[in-house]
Every structure is written in C-alpha cells, then in structure tokens.
Length: 177
Image 1 (spheres, one colour):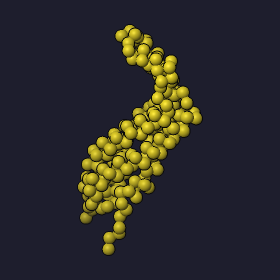
Image 2 (tube, helix red, strand yellow):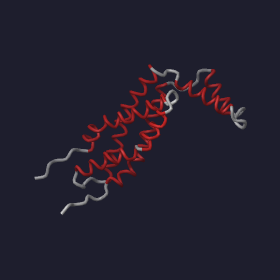
Image 3 (tube, helix red, strand yellow):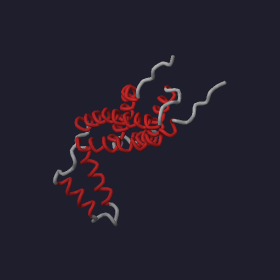
Image 4 (cartoon, one colour):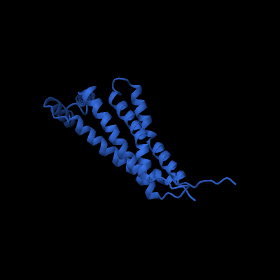
C-alpha cells in the first residue's frame, strides 16, 4: 500500500518558513548594503541563487511523489512558496525599515541625486529635478508602500521563476537496478 503524500499546500506551509528566512536575508542585505558593501554582494548572490533554491523545493516535492507530480502542481508549489516567503520577508523588511532605517528611501534618493548630479548629461535633467522635488516636499513613498511593492514584485517574478524551474524539477528519476 502506498503512503499518502503531502499536498503542495502542506509542503509550501512547511517550507515557507525557511524560504521566508532566505528572502528576509536578501531584503535585509539590500537595506543595509549602503552601510556595509559585502552585503551588496550577498544580496546579489542570494538573488542569483533564487531559481536554484526554488527548483530545490520543487524537486524535493517531485521526488517525494516518486516522480508523479504534475507540472502545474510544482508551479503552484513555487508560487505558494513565494507568497508565504514574501509575507515573512515583508514583515521583517517593514520592521527593519520602521525601526532601524526609517530614512532609508530619503537616503537612497539623496544618493541618487548626488550620483546623477555628477554626470554632465544628467546634471540638469528631469530625473534629478523630480527626485529633488520629492525629497524637498517629503513625497517619497512610505515604508509600507515600498514593502507592498516589494511583495508584489517578488511574488510576480517568483511565479515566473517557478514556471521555469518546475520544468527542471521534473527531470526523470534514475532507477537503480
């Protein structure tokens, strides 16, 4: 008699926490990358490795199901992982932004203004003027706005990544004779 396998939702629920911690590390690294440059490299590595991490969880489910997972199920697993992971990462990012870096967006905007002002072609451009206007009039998005944007951006691209990695996760299982 075959052992019943867990549903993709059970797997996503169980694996959502470690995936959320992974995404949280990426978010915190990006928030503090301007203070400590190696965090910028860590952020890039974590982002580049996202497809491999996604495929790892999808492959794990495929093997758990003895190779009988459908493509759509593995894709849905990836989507659920990104949704649950981003809920965790969003809470962490919001706490960091509210309590440790409340001026993060303004600091980034000032850095962009300074950098673009150094370029002769951009010095008097609309982007510099617009950014300066936003900073001067306190029109920058709030931390919660930025976190929601991050949530939807990563979740959307996570669904695209999951669609691709699900193909690789379904590669055949080699039977040992």
